[in-house]
Image (tube, rainbow, N blue to C red):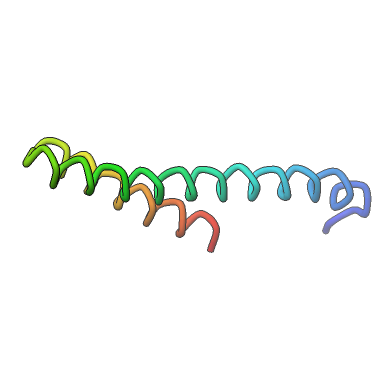
Length: 66
């Protein structure tokens, strides 16, 4: 059973959580682009691996938003 007061207090918290998750997702998307460029420019496998890690984090953020 959900009380009206519970809904009114959790809605702002859910909205804030979604905003933070969207910011995290955006940051990771930008990171993938930057790391891909840097890895190609430097011919660095380590930077490429770090970019792949960001792709995994994008998947996790997408799952949280879903």
